[in-house]
Length: 444
Image 1 (tube, rainbow, N blue to C red):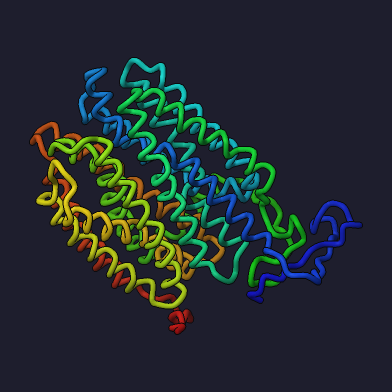
Image 2: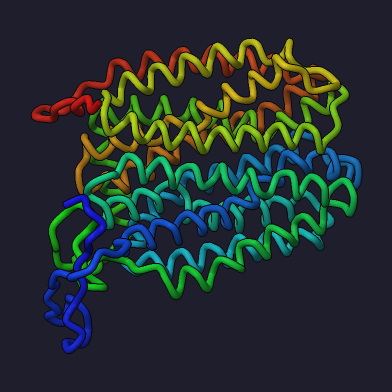
């Protein structure tokens, strides 16, 4: 049922559904609790993603203050991205064991601790520890696998749309924090910017603890658009389960096609544009605030593109959507080196808008294909696919800095990423639909 009418519970029975609470219909319309949980998840992802605004802004300040090479700084960013991805499948399993609230609160604390501790660092190994280890583990625990868990538990209807909205949360964080952090870095230095993102993570914690619920049955509700089901018992052996799901899914062809194409997605977004667009534009004479503002505009259109992609995923073949997204992204990257200039001009604005619409539009169809192929294990499988995304990003974050140190330019990295996107488009097209699964109906 897709109306806003929800079910509430018999308050005379303590302990929730697990203690025998029976759901009953509510006589008046109100917002379904699933949307409140989704809103809290949205804010959580924004708070956790605040740190992702920093690396591209701090490469030049750290290089100037400490003399660290761009390769060294890129290695720390690479470790952060790799752990972000590798943590995700285990985080999804931990949420099955301990609940979303506990895992997310600890994750936000790790992000805040890493960002705050970096204020006192004096050596590159500390950058690896604070940015790479602490922040990587924290952000990985509230990554897209968290979005998948929220969507799978709380929604039956509108899953594509909700996936798009939650995926767009990361871009919304970029939109909010990039211009702010750029202004802070230029006018006050990089340390106050790091403190700002630490506080952003901590501010979200009370909202998570007070408003987030692990399962609809905790409040005696059915998931949105579905029927009431009892809350499953906590799943023990979270790490074992995550590895077992990996070993099982790795025996199937679709897993490697999804993982490979999503690795290219990460390489061409987080690893490349998010990390090196600002320093590359700065190399061509553009000021850091102007370049950061362009990157923030990508975030604006990313929100639009990702939500629209979720809507499309509910209606069209996810494989074809992915192929179109990757092909268009690859073409746009091939043009980027010739668009770099000291000032903002119309062709660059067109690139920013175009690339923003395509930035993480790949997530809703990728998650839909994971759900189609792997059912109840789809959130953990998607966590492993996300791990490949971040490993691709990590590799390019490191290699991009090395290429810049060696050649004095980022051009080769842009061209290489464009070619890889063409490969990802082909990989998406050859994913076979699972037997018995019908293509989404085209809704007018």
